[in-house]
Image 1 (cartoon, rainbow, N blue to C red):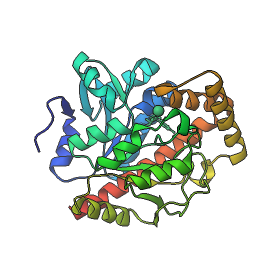
Image 2 (cartoon, rainbow, N blue to C red):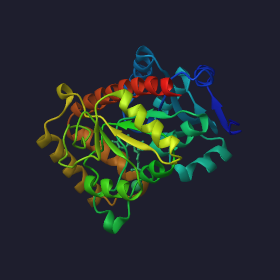
Image 3 (cartoon, rainbow, N blue to C red):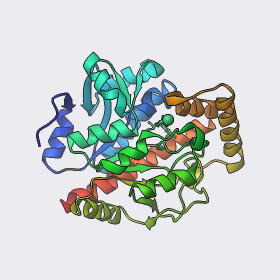
Image 4 (spheres, helix red, strand yellow):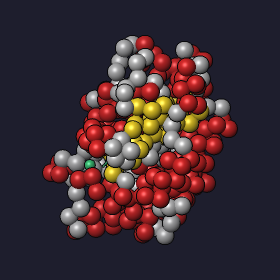
Length: 307
Ligand code: PSU
Ligand code: MN
């Protein structure tokens, strides 16, 4: 495949892809905007280590000095984590200008999928995806992540979505756009901090081999879209639903009162929830990312056997 002239694939990632070995993409908004320094850097490096230990090659994705990176160095990750909120949160509409100007960007689920696909990476692990926000019937605030899932062929392994979103409308949107929503070992959509949401997923799948098979068939059918795998947070790290739901409701009310909108909404809500739960939510967040990285790596290994 001819690679995009703005893309740098790290040597280790390029070698793995050329040899048909498993590779797992990781996003960088979670580093710059999702967690405080230094836990963000520690977590990002640990996630890479977990993927390696499982048997795949990690590729943290970001925009550094206007270059699209499929595979960040340790220094890149340290840079993104230290610079934090000063790194532009980069969605699809931001990429061209950031590259043209030679700037940095922290990639969301959307842009991580885009760059992963450019590089030839098929599986991506993260924490939570964006979705249809509560009140979207008036604000029209719907994450570009859903649109990307509808037309970019990358499997996204996440812990569901936070109920800062309207989970029911998020599922409706994904249905309309033809994105399969899979529960890993569950029939219920997990709600990030908790294993349950009250909403059903489309299919329960119980093994990485079956996940890989479903994704391979989707590609062989010539479908261009992605697949969303929702992996419940391990029981021991899941939060008390009452505590977390109160924090989420308070955060949503505060965002409304302060008139927060646009791309600031999600980072504002995430930071507020962390304040309100005194850091307990950060610990859960870190653990669920580890759990998703493991599943993504195991699935990438199964997928590489099918190719
Ligand atoms: N939801 C989370 N954690 C996150 C994000 C969303 O629970 O870190 C980040 C991801 O990078 C996601 C982005 O792609 O926020 C979505 O932002 P928006 O809602 O502005 O599209
Ligand atoms: Mn939005």
